Image (cartoon, rainbow, N blue to C red; front, top):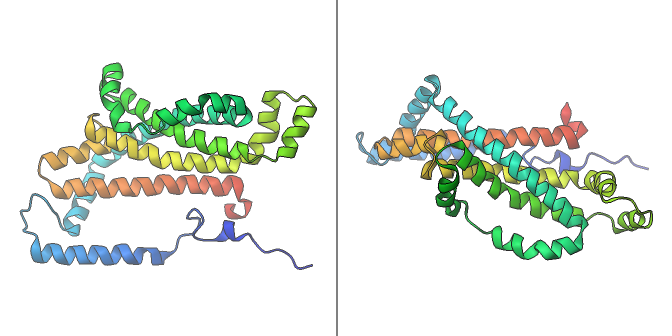
Length: 267
């Protein structure tokens, strides 16, 4: 019998970005070159709305050297990770409970579907009244938003548990807790981790949005101040750094996923 080769889902470059292909830099490089050319030809040197890529790169380097971006990044990532941990934990617990109890799922489905579509920005005025300005408000909004993708995807993962195993567990009168920890979670943990990866991206988006709108800290606030001060190069530098931070955040989670669920990828 021929020996099975490695799973294409684990080795494919397109599956979660587990392989880096330098050719992916081609399109961004071309776009930057075109933007630089257009900026040199058509954008005045004293423009208050646009900046050339080389000006953005200079400001990005300056902000990194003086520590402005690093401090703002710690503030934003701290809020995003705290909100992800809090909201993800609530979503995980509720998702497991709803997945294991169809009755509870039916009773709570209306509440979940009513709360889930609320935009994070709509919570800012209420959160300001409750928490005031600062990290508490940002973490609360981020946690609320991260709860729902983890809950929905965890509930779906639990629902796909082998029915025969659950029937045997009921016949043997295995407790709810033992069913959750011994049967359901081990089989669904890989898909639950994907839910946390999705929520992680959402947490960073929400944290930056709250900083732009209301919280005078972090990367979003720095970008907004630069825009209001008519410094487009600084504003675009913050935007570029937010993209880099988001990419690095996702890359770290991908590496964790490879470590836990793909032993061949540890090497």
